[in-house]
Amino acid sequence: MRLVTFSTLSVRTPRLGALIREDRQVVDLGHAAQDANTDVEDFASMLALIDAGPGALDRARNLVTQILDKGEGPALLERDEIRLHTPLPNPRRLRDCTCFLQHLRNAREVRYTRLAARENDPEAAMGAFRASGALDVPKEWERAPVYLNSNHLSIIGPGDDASWPDESRRMDYELEWAVVTGSGGTNIKADTAARHFFGFTIFNDFSARDIQAIEIRTGAGMGGPGKDFDAGNALGPCIVTVDEIADPYDQTMVARINGEEWSRGNTAMMDHQFEDVLAHLSHNQSVYPGEVFGSGTVPSGCGLEHNRYLSDGDTIELEVEHIGVLQNRIVKPANWRDRQTPDKN
Image 1 (cartoon, one colour):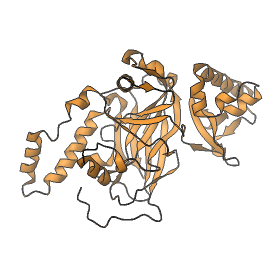
Image 2 (tube, one colour; image 1 turned 60 degrees about the vertical axis):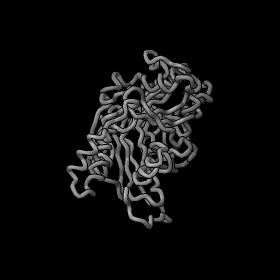
Image 3 (cartoon, one colour; image 1 turned 180 degrees about the horizontal axis):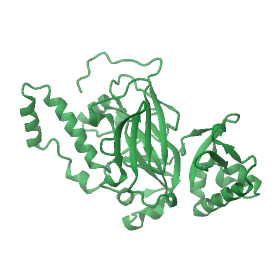
Image 4 (tube, one colour; image 1 turned 120 degrees about the vertical axis):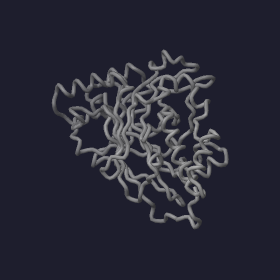
């Protein structure tokens, strides 16, 4: 199923739905359940459906089949009659992981090339950086997926504007995808972790690179104000249940800025797959239904790797095969404040 959270043009209250007929129509699952005289509480929201377990998902499939058989009715809506929201507005937790190690290598190459360019002999400076191991990915990152806690309280969806934080001059997108958990557990084994998956979605982890660079120098890690700001995490356009994708680790990923392709990769490039993520992150701690785990950036999947950044008003489209396109615009608020010091990061 291709599950969405949506509202109609006349009623703004978010509802749970399923995209059908090549995403041209939507089945209102709550309305369909009411018409079928079945329990509507399981279809009140995406999180309610996840919490209700596999049986509720089976009932959702049956409801869609019934609506398709009818071919009409108030539970069947045209795509142009609705507005999509982020499919999971209230995940229990959102963590972003480093599953693509080549992205880290690419990012380090760009960063140290920038630093070397400031020296009298850039080529010699770059050689010294390489010899020192500054461009190497730490072995700890190879052994297990490092993660950061992301802001799960302010998530935007398809068509929403991402907010440009004050004082940032280098805003960036990140081409990622994510797994949503359908069941929880502790000390989950990698070979059984897929049983805990509910579905997959697209994830854009907007990043203020200049602010992030300052945080990294403090030793505080990759997060902080450079990533943890309102309207900076986008999920969507839908959650595709695991049964819909035969091989999740062979999906093309593309990013376009204002219609121009900037990035292209494949989920096959993951060094740590989502099964590894769940096994690692559930060690000595509980994972719950309705959590989201981001993949980290696919190689070439952000402006940082190209030393190329977003501009105010840019439209960002992230596409992942079999999931769809997540489109957002990055906008400076009317009261946005510029930094008064030069950008030296």
